[in-house]
Length: 312
Image (cartoon, rainbow, N blue to C red; front, side, top):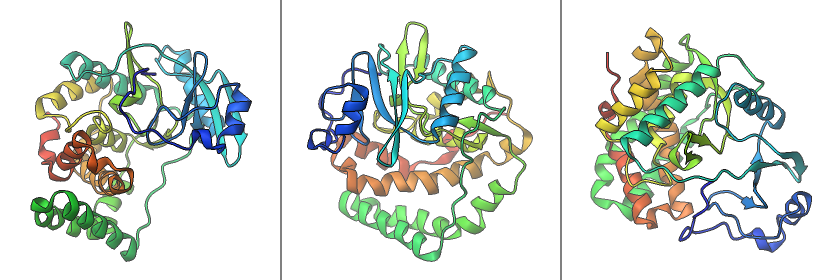
């Protein structure tokens, strides 16, 4: 885990008693969260956090570790506390991602290794396909409208003109194109981004595998491409940075012809599903008031996805 999170707005309910049983069970002092978006607490050499699909998650990360993949594995737990499962992971000393070609290359290699090792199921939950009705779609359109109107009014017309028709067509376009294809599925973190990696002398370590699911491989790759700099950087990958990442990833994984054909669709899928959610959710989390994060969100809603083309 990265130790320096100074200056970040923290989850403020840690001292309120809400997590008293967590502190007691893991033997750690009452404290505020070290992560702004979810409760994560530090103990003596450990990080304590929630997990999901606890049994499958434990099997998966231990399998990865057994073959030398650099990932945290539980040292205590899972314990069911309230409605959640909690685990303690070892605290990994290292540095944060620095957006150098070397760090990008190492990250691409790591994701490729993760996907290469994920072909055999470990018991993670399957990715759930969305089921959106017209009202849900209009909530997204309205959320985008609010975000742009409040924080990027000059871009409002452009962004709504681009996203509203795509969001309304998603269930008949991107979703069936991906869902009906015969794509490889893998166990994946579904949250592969820079602030979930700690760089050690031996290379990056995945410190937050807890959103893991079994998912079409190309969707996890698309999600990583779009959100790798979320919470840490002020923009998405540049074209040159993506080329470094992709070259490293493809050194570990050979995409199928269908995956390559559907790559632009997968990017649109994740932009419309996870990208839009990230932009709209930023209204509640205060991300739009953070200049760095606001710049990232602006790049996300204006990005030309051709930036992330796959080389032939």
